[in-house]
Length: 276
Image (cartoon, rainbow, N blue to C red; front, top):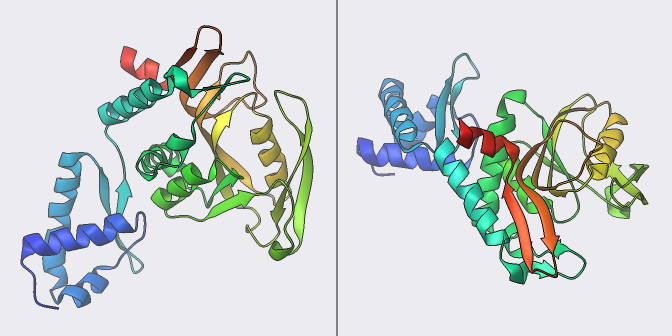
């Protein structure tokens, strides 16, 4: 590779780091790749830290020690996060999203890479300090948001199935009661999917009464795993939920088919931020 000027090298290194969030790269790796001294790379890192801080897209962190190096942690400024959530609420308030039965059409949002990547960064930013080993979700609509969260954290994604698959080998299955309809459902997970006594966060697209979240908690207990966070894109307004601690991006108050009206707002977390 032709030797690069500093600004070109900084751009190239930042591209590599941002393409691989939370992955530690040694200075030796970049020293060999770009044929420069480690002392020069240390100066590059200082420039990157300042640049990322100024544009408020995350942080560049250095890790000391033999296994140390540098990594990029994605992030979003508070004002950008609130603006993004308000924009989503505006999109979801459109009457043409109402589906008979009081549901909202959300597939275009859930399957938009640009939107779910931002959701993933928000959830990752929220739970980063809890040091989860896995992101867990249940098939199927929660998968896009969960995989983007896993990418931002740099950890594996685990998908809990509503039925066991022969291709996944032996599984652990439980029955759980849904929080809203009180129906008995089954969920299962391959024994090979997770290491016992790990930490995880559960990410989903929608929460009604929290029955699925509680079912995940009961299933993961079979693996001696600890839940360190629950994140959902939209929570439905209900008097009580089966789980107490969770983080929602938006709160759905009501869907009125007769009035053709959807009331959805940023969650309490954001309204409190706005009031402060």
